[in-house]
View (tube, rainbow, N blue to C red):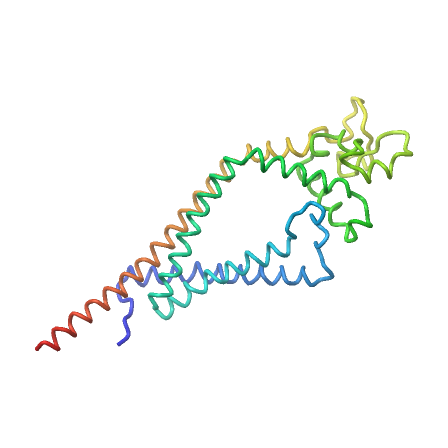
Amino acid sequence: MAFKVTTCAGKTSKVLLLIVNITIFLIGAGILGLGIYYHLNDGLYEYVFREAEVITIPSIMMFFGSIFIFISFFSIVGAICEVTVMLKVYMGIVAIIIVLEAVIMAVCVAMRGDAETHAIRVVHNLMEHYGNTTADELNVITKTIDKTQEWLECCGLDGPADWTDPEKATYWVNAHMDAMEDELPSSCCVETYQTCVYSNSTIESFFEVGCKTALQDFVKENVVYITVSGIALIIAQCMILICALKIRFELETNYDIYCVDDMQMTSM
């Protein structure tokens, strides 16, 4: 005998669970596909962060894409086929994810200083190879730094002086050591200037704020949105967990009722 979800609340929970997890499955498949494509496309992004000891972008995409597919699979199969075991596994995974999110948030707050120090070292390692087509064959490091400086309207990690420091921007300084003035990357220049040099001039031809400060200001300005997004994510996960719990309880209740009725019929 098959045990089905029959109540309005149970059916609604089932529909919501399927909609959310089918969406997650498709997103995961898309991320996984892009990760595989970038990984196989002549090593695209393979040189990014290699010197900085950071996992490559395609690897991260493939990991999270696989996780999304794996998690949503249990929910989709469990909801469609109404298999309580699959739903229990799914609920356990979601519960673990919620706990891990809380732990990661706590660790990030506790180890903020260490994480910032490591991030600074990573950026310095990247800056060493800016403009170096030998170390950065696909020119990805240069483009990444340029896009970041243009987006945040900043220059260097701590400021424009970073691009004149041979210990931080080794290749860039050596490549422009014959110049009369300290030339800055074009991404450091304001829109009205195509080239700019580091000087104490009052002419604002380049961004004077370092990217570290600019990023901190960006986070402070958007901390409300980041906080609300985090809370909304946790609430959504809890609602999904409740939906799965409702379906599971209804299936188990129907099974218990059937067992009781069967025992009564047998005793008669």
